[in-house]
Image (tube, rainbow, N blue to C red; front, side):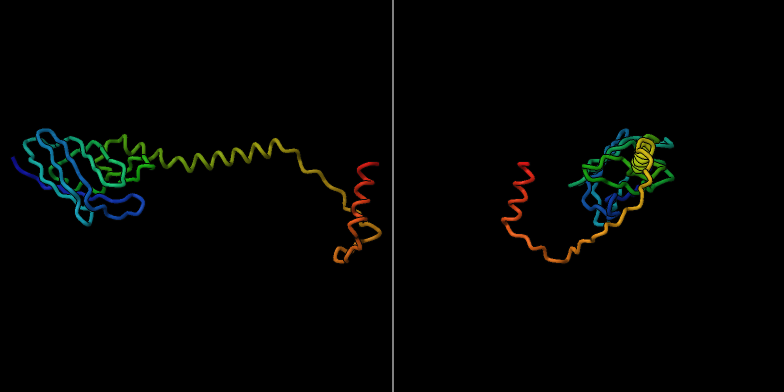
Length: 175
């Protein structure tokens, strides 16, 4: 039984920065491994490989301030690079985190669904504009405005007193 060395890296999905001290747990048939990522987000582990061509199991990654990542993993004896696993903050729940050759198709399908949100939002805006255009009445042609014979100079001070304003209001209210 030969031992094969594997390597991977843990990154922050938003910043693309390495995450150090992330706990990486590998649960494989016949063995479990727990390791931590280094300052560059890199983790390395060794797996005993027997006559099988593939080892299948589960990988779980935990890091403070990030959503716990858990996924199916398939280890091949000749492909020793697990790739980048990108962790997300708890408010962001999409599992687009591992290189394609190690992920189940389900995780890639979810990634594609996440990309649909901006497209759906754009379609909704276009539909709202179409509905508004169809339901609003057509613009009416307005006749040209007539110019009054006597123009008011708005910059001129008006000779108003408090009494004249009060009298004007009482006359308009009570008449």
